[in-house]
Image (cartoon, rainbow, N blue to C red; front, side, top):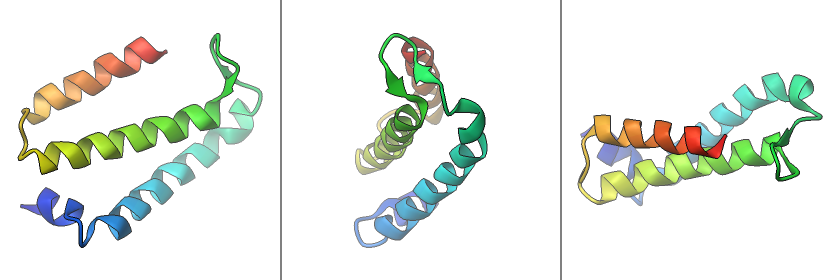
Length: 88
């Protein structure tokens, strides 16, 4: 299973680092236009919120795989959407 291979302890760090870099590059494209944006009501800068979200996403996927896919992909995706909507 590709997900198990990508997130096993022996191989996870290069993959996770690649994904972090990928998401960071996506964020950089929008940094200038969001440079003065703070997360509403918190004073936390957008970029820090994005880093937090990326880490939460990758960490949750990692734990989902480690728990032998204990939830369906649809349920996991739905949960991400609900959490995202509650954080904004």
